[in-house]
Length: 204
Image (tube, rainbow, N blue to C red; front, side, top):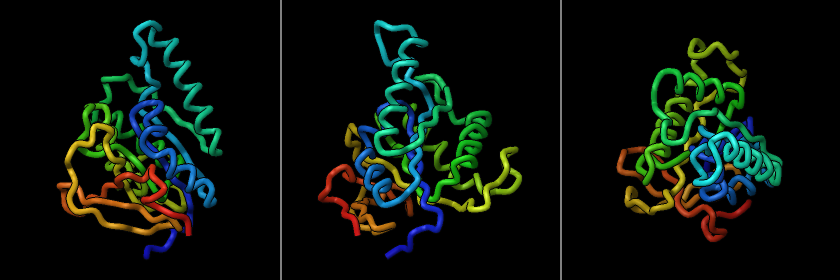
């Protein structure tokens, strides 16, 4: 059994508005019920999410929806304003994500699986992994280093397309919640599977 972190701050960092609702909303709600501070961040505002509205109109709609959804569980929503389809792993974007992590100071992070059906998702997975490792390094950002900065527990959400990247499942308990997990193809890279189902985790 793992001990709960002293700073109970959970961050979902995913590509688009509504990704959190599809991939980890149940877990985030349970964490909020357990007293965690919950943050939901997206790399983009969903500017390519409509065939009838222009990018500015659909972005305004989807950001407003994301803010409202986050408020339902008392969470805070953040958007990095990258463009749909154009999320990349480069120095400016890594800096932007590290700065977000510095402001939030998470001890628990959820992001996309390393292998997913969409490149935006895979790039965000890389960005979350980089920022999780780096945000506590003293000289990595101009944003002041928070006192509680640690390398957070990083979990990968099961891809919607159910891409076969996992091995035999295992169970890990943290912060009063039991996660059903599987190991990805890369060693020591945990991936949460099926945590939207109540049968896969329970409160203490």
